[in-house]
Length: 340
Ligand SMILES: C[S@@+](CC[C@H](N)C(=O)[O-])C[C@H]1O[C@@H](n2cnc3c(N)ncnc32)[C@H](O)[C@@H]1O
Image (tube, rainbow, N blue to C red; front, top):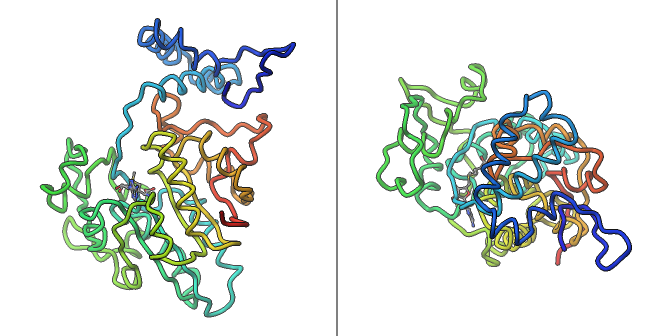
């Protein structure tokens, strides 16, 4: 039986009844289901924030989130931010230091949505290493969002209520699309100086500067499709962030294995925003090497993910060095040593 990382010895002398096992119990799910979840959520919300940080409360939070995931209706989202996770970008910059003058670097950003992540990466990398020839593939399953991303034009007005469902994509104007699935402005995490460096501004709109838009290939594709590996070729860095959490675990695992095939042996996979059990399982099975540099900072580097725990299915559990598997579980970046 799976038990959220706690060992259970079937038929053996010792059996540890863990909260994780309780959450998977058929009795709880079938008979108590909704009332039990309601009560558990209410108890979490009643805990003072200072207590929520303690180990027993964290375990309780893990139990609560596993219940929420069992019942959640997952749906894709276009929500994104410029400079979303700064330690992640800093690690990409550091990895470039390994490359010689004039090197070619191939990078694919899968599930790129409105383009904020791609342009953020291009800005950090091109600013740090103008001598490096950066070849970027930006991939998304939605052709419409990809066309919008390629234009690189974003509205700065954030009218309330513009956080509509994804099927509004074809009807929305630029402002509507900028705000789609956003709980806050796309540019919320940028300083004025960073906006000045990345954008041309006109009234309430910004356009990504042309030197950042150049050299990006926008490719409509499904991350689960085995053919994308032959389309983009072997990549030095593949970024697959914050879309696998919106798939059920079986589909997410299949997709993750496929995306990893894009990485050349010795290259790097950045993958955050997915169920940690799925990532840990695949990383261990595939023998991926966790990158320890900035590991904790990256794990904690996106406030929208950490703030969603434990009440959202996509929320990210706190970094816990007491877990025996923490080095793999909390790594968001892996060096791919071999391909399947
Ligand atoms: C929440 S956004 C993430 C944007 C960006 N990666 C970030 O971290 O800010 C998820 C994006 O993944 C895309 N997506 C979902 N499933 C996909 C798939 N199977 N293949 C490619 N893109 C996918 C969605 O269309 C959406 O634009």
